[in-house]
Length: 249
Image 1 (cartoon, rainbow, N blue to C red):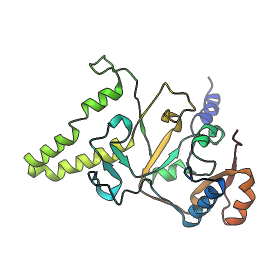
Image 2: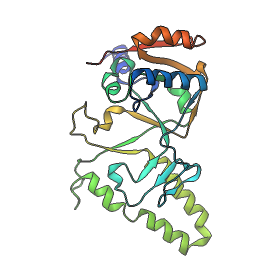
Image 3: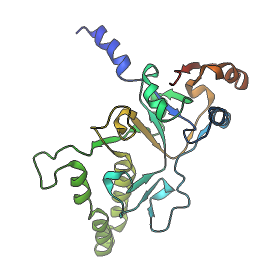
Image 4: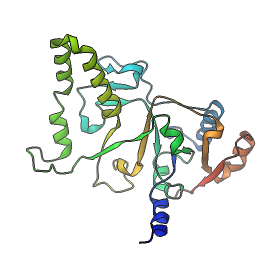
């Protein structure tokens, strides 16, 4: 394959933008549009969930960006709950499946801009993948859950028995929690590509905490076509690209 052909294929395989979709829990497109306008006006994407009031029994890392519940299975994406802003690394032409699960209102930024804010892709683990070489646990989900049971206890023991290393031990635990386990995501690889359990199709990137931006940082706004004119009227200072979301059946 020639270099030019390979480059053309890459343009549909990866994107130089990362896109955040807003308002998936809202009851109507009008409500989603109003939220989009609010975000653009404030220049702020709020992290979710908000962990400032961490529930009893959870342990939080500095900044309340990650809460940890050792009683939850690691393979169910519940043990480490990260307070993040999520983006998808999907070319705009191929977002239809993603929009069906979230919304048709999106804000895209250049990948380089978000990298400077700490954006990084999640680490996907297929739950049903066999262990290799074969282990006593049949699948990766079982392997991770069983081998991870003593993780938090080990750090507690180190802090208690080696008090002179308490600070460094805590730093290592926070590092692993925030930059490794908070970015780990188990998914069902056998699920259909249109199934919400197949998280791999989301091609997710995350930023810990809120994301502040200026309108000049926004590379693209995605809305249903009927909202295109209203968007220009409501945000006349935005001079970037507007893409129309496909109609959903």
